Length: 633
Image 1 (cartoon, rainbow, N blue to C red):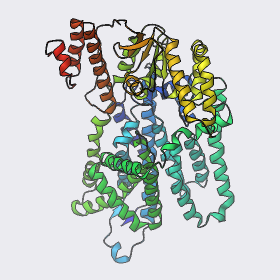
Image 2 (image 1 turned 180 degrees about the vertical axis):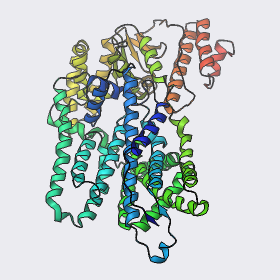
Image 3 (image 1 turned 60 degrees about the horizontal axis):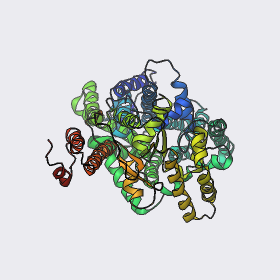
Image 4 (image 1 turned 30 degrees about the vertical axis):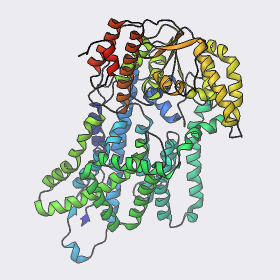
């Protein structure tokens, strides 16, 4: 096999990016969705500080993009930006694949006997294979999902693609001698967006080493490379302390001094989940394998494995660097024990997509020798490789997803003016509330307190700035809690029992501060209260209201509105929407049982009827049905 001289057309990466961008638009979320979507959108829109590691590049770029006068909501605009980043990643990756294929195939050496039987790969074939492998990557389930809503990983995939492109061009010396400098700058940018940039370093170091034969021969250039990375990342991370001086509404970690800044950018609070146990690594590896099947489908996996063999035959050194990078990436990510780990697999998926391109080359040669028609062969192999990826459409489609908007607004609307909600439903309600309350000014009078974030001193500082009246009411119990917490946050010896005692007093005082308009999430009732880890103010109890429990005086009856609400559930049901369905149904059942205690049978029926209508899959306790003396259909 040989390869004709190839000049890279300028329009093909644009075409690949535009094609996938159009596909992404059909699955784009119109509103906030689960996990960090609401928080990140709120941080971008208000120029705040996000959860560790802060993501300054992501924040600043999002803030600038949402200033563009497009006649859509802010959240749609920021979701759209994610599609833009993902499409740019696909376009850039297609150029990277083209460069690698061109380099490896051009360097291939064959003996004269083989030359007589070789198949010539022309420019058009190579372009289609490059675009094809990029589309296989871009239509993978995890990658595609990043394009549907606000997330840091969409920008990260674009930065990954740039690192791959410029590190390889620096290695191959085919374009510009300054590629290593550009690569260093991009790595710095990438670190200022997400620390998974570390996964690219085995590849970058390996390519550098092969090119120079020995790192020591170009030590000055290496040091210059490192300086560029540090200065670029440092420039963007300086945003965190500078912005923190102005105490923005969202000021996670309060990185105003060096100790807070270092704790924030290192993600110290998350480090306990890194390399935690062999059992967790096994669990995450099983999840990786499951995701891998969804990412490439079986056809893509077979083509990719074939590609690994082919690149190893054609260029063993480069193959070893790529395979090592792929394996190190997997090894690192499976040792991070978090629930939403799938996004951390993206870089390994990108490397495997490069292997797919070599498998497609081999498949083209095999089929072309039989079909003898270039167009037909290209059409056949791309259909065979890309069409199965479209089966991910239903799994990633968010175009009608208003579930988290509806759930958040229903909760906020269910409480009186100036109420307090104490919960830790971050993925479902609290994170979305950040966006709707502070960007769209929806029920901004309600104070939403995250029970888990309350464990951190920076969060209390944020509450003091945003709700000074509340802070003055809890000051007497807040001060001893912060005092006991400081040694723990500084990494010094601490009294865990004292911290817990002060923390429980603080929780109780916060609920007390907004009586009679304090509400508590169902999760606190079922967990912390049942275990005695959270106590109500003396003389008070809780009663199910509609979506929350309200704190009331003992012996009182709590009226509640009729359940005349609607929520736009989508056909796709995952663990996030399942939680919301179970939570709402559970609260309706609790309310029905509460009405029966006061002999309000007719009212109890209304809540059960609502469960039957909206959540037919939910089992209603038989004793409850017997008490209302009717089976509801």
